Amino acid sequence: MVALIALILSVILIMMSCSSVVQGPESRIAMGTVCSVNLYEKGRASHYELVFSRLYELEEIFSPNIHGSDLYRINQNAGIAPVSVSRELIIVLERALEYAELSDGLFNPALGPLIQLWGISTDTPIVPGDEDIQLSLSLSNFRNIIIDHVNGTVFLSEPGMLLDLGAIAKGFIADELAALIRGLGADRAIVDLGGDIYALGERGINEHWNIGLQDPMDGLGSYLGIIRVSNSAITSSGTYERFFDSDGIRYHHILSAENGFPINNNLLSVTIISKNAMDADALSTLVFILGSDRGMELIESIPGVEGILILDDLQIKLSPGIRDHFTLINDEYIII
Image (cartoon, rainbow, N blue to C red):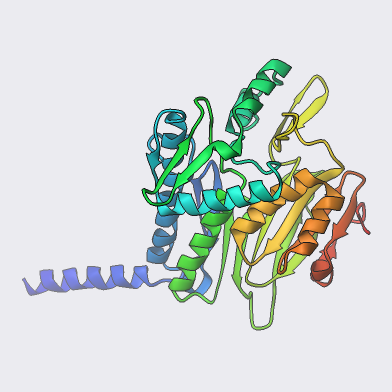
């Protein structure tokens, strides 16, 4: 019996020891992409479980494809009935509608019918006909999204409407995970949700994080420059993220709420740096839609927001506050 008790105590001590061992970054599949978290000094198995459990919890709210998610139920009940939703979805939807009003509908969380029509994020994308595009646009009036704060419901007032929060929800999730990690007492951490990055704290004492800026003309993992940041979110949107080719023409996933086709301007990508990842996420899309001149004007009008715009002639525009924190490493590009 004494030997058995000693064995049990040994196993318990080993398990406790393992749970306190600091481990490196952990990656899991969520939201259709690889999501990675590095907690550094707080990198214990139990902490990673807390972070990824929260990630999956939020995915269950915002995924349009998970049956029973808040977003799925809203879309299924378009034109039928209001749907009770979580506090988190209302927070994100309210912010999305603020950007929709700010941009007079260029940023549009009701663009779901058009996004579904093109299917650019699916295995079977198509170039739709004009009639189908116009029908989808007619179902994309963001002012037909009704939030009832008293009852905690969301209602799409027209049958056939589809809510899509793909341009803002991932940023909110990054903010939520960063807040959770701070609550664990972490001084530094990296959250990477497939390109939406939150660099919490500093890499070292008075030492910035070095974040690679994707080269939009090359494959994933190929960088054209380095961004040095602390305690900031970094989000990019561009033509290289999701696209397909048809009859020699490339069609990317950032669609115009005006004509229903992929945005055709002089931009390859937009990167936003901000203390708030939800705003960075939304602004990277909105600035891309606006184009380089109007987009940079918007960036410079918002305190605490910086931007890097890559043009199709391989010129790079930097907002004033990021110039001293960006290093170009690809001489095919020129900073203007």
